Image (tube, rainbow, N blue to C red):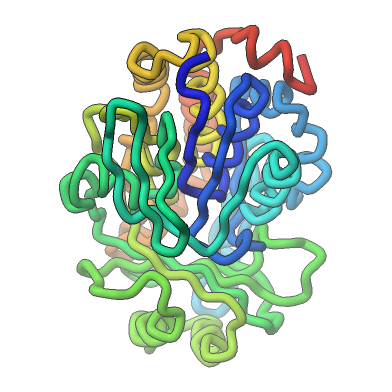
Length: 394
């Protein structure tokens, strides 16, 4: 088989999912991750529809995902006095099965660490296509050459920037930011809005935990911030949520001692082609849409399709990359649907009331869930013999 050595940048979800399939079809896989270790906890992610569940089954992890699932709960939308206004149902936010991102990442790592090389605390700094492969330099490690490189390193992908060009050419800012914070105190649960701002406590974080996780969404201009500076994140959130009602003053007061704070923009990737030369993009790096609700499912299904096409093409990356894009672009178009920020944090009080009315209407809610199911199954999966034949599940 040609193209047997593969470098994957990113060890969250898409990268290890691809590593799983590639290692079983004869590739030597190296996964490089900028973070010093796997990131625990994080927001809940979900899988929707028969297609995504089938891929988990073929990977042999569906039962374990269900065992580790959060058991997502309904989220009550409240007013400033804590009175219920509407209910955001678990079926809307949690799909068919929901799991913490960190738990899913750990599960995928457990299934691949014995067969793949993982390098933590390092990142790719340059990519040079040569006649014999891709010459790669790293921030810390020695240069190496790989047959193929995969950018599975998220919406702010370094691989995409190095292979395709600056982020500004492919990532569209949608006018909102979001944050996650493990507060370290129990503030209960609920979701509260004021124009352009939303905060949700509890919800689908671990139901066994006695401390609150805060999920925050707010409208703003583009922030000039360091994505890795958590102290700066605390200051930005304190300013953004100053003067808000309900339990928000308590949330703001808890931010300085919060053990984990993450802030980022709500953005969308728009790119014409997923591959350039021997480099290909997967997951959010190729079709990310922050808080779009399909990112994890797209990443896992995309990993299956990309690995399957490489196997069918006998390692001919040009043929495989074209087939991957042709098979997947229609499915990934759901990531073109924007609006998560304005839906979660409407800009006006009227917008908040209209959004709440949606969740009080059984018919409208049913229609939204039906549409979600349609998007989640809008692809015909091939039975790639090289993958399914070596998978732990049929």
